[in-house]
Image (cartoon, rainbow over all chains, first blue to last red):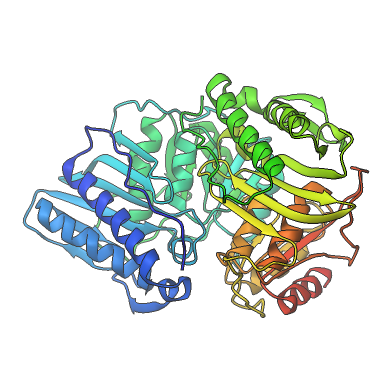
Length: 269
Length: 269
């Protein structure tokens, strides 16, 4: 068992009630699951999700709690495992109940809830909550956040997070790593994007593996620009609301447009 | 400024008073420094350490607090920046005041205090404290810890942490990464070794860059074996107490001797 507690999320007072309720439900369910199951049990693949990837037990448990909270809040839900749950609302929460599932299962303390409120296909508000500390990042589209990116414009000497290299992306990965001053691989895109937003790192990039689904990027799509940075796809594909969970993007979160452009050019070689 | 708090370390009651006092002093000084200096100021290189590497402001501030606590506790101190401080005791604390200095400075929430109590050249007790949560791992040489490694014996499918690839170690790095199921780069050796000890990951390895000083590995040298794993050097050089801080090792922490051997064979190619 993982002995460490999962605190209640520390949320600003003005978070949309449906986002707050789902974040609290996710943290509560994850904390309870850590007390009931071993690390190996949490990691076990118990189903195939609506997005076509295997569902670990930890994903299944937390998503069930999130779906129940969304239903009680009266909003639709688009989520990794369940797909689109229509509760007859004009508002839809697009949620990654557990970002960094492998970390969450085995106990690497880097995993989070990430969600965005979408009205008429437009993401208007986002919340990301780091499970192991309760730290939360909240943003509204087009409103500046109190936390800011570093504003850095050059890759040389930058401090970056990368998705792990995969077969076919090793060379692009090493090109970025060799330019950067520091490289990290935390295996939790949503949390890494928040480190960009708060100025702890200069950028996060998927060096070309097209790994991300909408719910891996949509909270960052609201939050990183509100903090002064940018969130782009490597190939310039717009990140649009779409209940088709087989779509994938290669996400780049950067402290400035110039840094994003240099990362994209370096990855594309 | 980094707005997040640094809690007081959550320590077991039976930690040696000098280890407890230095861990508390480190966390207190780091928390205060986060409130007084910007991330850029904490990262600034202000001196060259006794180990031959540049000292960031965050290192200087935390080490000063640790040195004062060691003096007050009446033990000698061997530390990264100050070198050996002889306070006339038979006991020496070997301490990394801030492991993961770049993380600590910029606010990536992965940095820790790590220290070992050495009596007559023998490390007998160790304490590692993660600054951002206060979580602590305590061990006595030869006594089993309540937390345990995963016990995993095979690299294929393992869950590993690696030091970032550097020029000359890229191929070894990719050989390990391509065998493993999950790869992470957290840039904090002492904390990554504790994730091995508590069974969150199967192994941590420096793939051949000879980066580690004694204080980067000595807490793990006590803690990982007490949790059922091993702590080895890639080239079989014994990790012995030595105030000469120019010495370097290539550390491997693994859940089992078999996994350590396979990692070493894979890295050496």
